[in-house]
Amino acid sequence: MTFEEAKNKLAPAGQEHLLTYYEELTEEGKAGLLNQIDALDLSLLDLIQDGAKEVAKGKLEPLGAVTLEKIAQKKDDYEKKGLEAVKACKVGAVLLAGGQGTRLGLDKPKGMLNVGVNKELYLFEQLINNLLQVVKKADAWVPLFVMTSEKNNEDTTTFFREHDYFGYNKDYVFFFVQEMAAASSYEGKIYLEEKGRIATSPNGNGGWFSSLAKAGLLDKINEFGVEWLNVFAVDNVLQKIADPVFVGATIDAGCVCGAKVVAKADPNEKVGVLCLEDGKPSIVEYYEMTDEIINSRDEKGTLLYNYGVILNYLFDVKTLTRLMNENMPTHVVEKKIPYINEKAELVKPTEPNGYKFETLVLDMIHMMDNCLSFEVEREREFAPIKNRTGVDSLDSARELMKKNGIEF
Ligand code: UTP
Image (cartoon, rainbow, N blue to C red):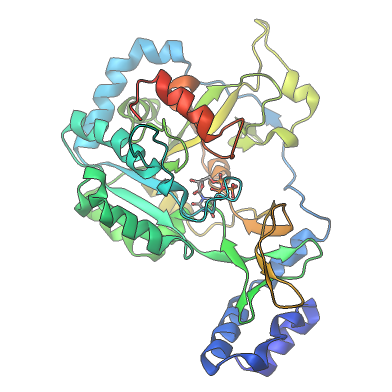
C-alpha cells in the first residue's frame, strides 16, 4: 500500500491522524505502518457508534445441568469412558493464554505469575501439574496447544523452555499465535502506540480454533487422532484439564460440546449463564438478562438460570472444523489502552480509555446444536485470578488452593 492509498483509506473514516508522524519514520518504519493500515478492519469502528453495546439476545429458556448428585452416581462409568478416550489420544487441551490480563496489570504473561508463598509456583506450572494428574492416571500424554498473542509469545515460549516445560513432554506441547485488532478511543479514533505503530490488542479468545488451524495444527490434531478439544483459561489455578469424568459424561450424553458450570452464589452474581436461546445452547451475561429472568425459580425454589460458566469447555473437533468459517459476533470492550498523546509521549492509563474489539469463545456455544451443562464444585475447580485484590484475586485463589491441599 502506498502513502496515497493509505490516506484514501483512512480519510473517509476520520483516521488520518495515524499518518501524523509518517515523514519522521525510517523507510522500514514507513513500510511497517502502511502494512498495518492495509490490514486494518475499519468496519469494526461502526460498532461503537452508540458506545459499547451488546448483541441483542433471542428468546431465553432455562437449561438444567447434570448435577453434582447425578455425576456422583455415574462417576465411575464416566471416568472409565473418559480415560479410554484420553488413553487413545482422542482428547487434546487448549490453553488460552493470549489475553493481556489488564485488570491484574502484570507486565508479563499472566501464566508467569508466581502464586507461591513458600516456594515458587507459577500459574503455568500449576496448570501443567493439574494436567499431569490425568496423564498419570491414563498413562498417556495429552497434546497441549497453547494460544499466545504477538505481545506475549516470545516471553511465554521462553518461559516454558527455561522451565523444561514444567515436567511435561515437550513433544506434546504446541504454541500458536492469535490475531490482533486495533484499539480506539471512546470517540472512535484509533490509537497509535508508537509513531509508526497502531495500538493493537489480542482480538479476543473466540478465534482460537481458526488461529490454531491457520498455524497448521489441525494436521497435528488429525495425526494424533484428537476428537475432542478441552479449552480453558490461563488464570484458574484449580482448573481441571482433560478431566476424564467430564469427557466421559459428554460422550455418554451424545453431545457435541460440554461446559463446566457452577451453581450461582446468588442470583445477581456477575457470571455468564448457560441457558437456551431460541432453542440452542447459549451463554448469556448477567447484564443481558432482565431482573425477572435472573430471579425466576422453579417449584422447589431453585433458580431457573442457575449455572454460571467457568471457561472450561469441551468441543467436538469435527463440529469445530465444520463451523470454523462462520461469523461470530464482535464485542466492544472497554479497556486500558497504552497510547501516544499529542506530544508523542507514551501514556499508560490506569483507567479504561477506549475500546478493544473481541470475539469470545462463549459465543461458540450458541453455534453448537447441543451442549452438556456439567456441574462442578466451585471450591474445588474455580479459583480465577482476575483482579489485583478482593474478588477473584491472588488472595482469594490462595485461600482456595489451601482448601484443596495444594502446596505453595
Ligand atoms: P479474560 O476475559 O479474563 O481477559 O480472558 P484477559 O485479557 O486475560 O484479562 P483482562 O480482561 O484484560 O483483565 C479469559 C481467558 O481468555 C484468554 C486469557 O488469556 C484468559 O485465559 N484470552 C483473552 C486470550 O487467549 N486471548 C484474548 O484475546 C483474550
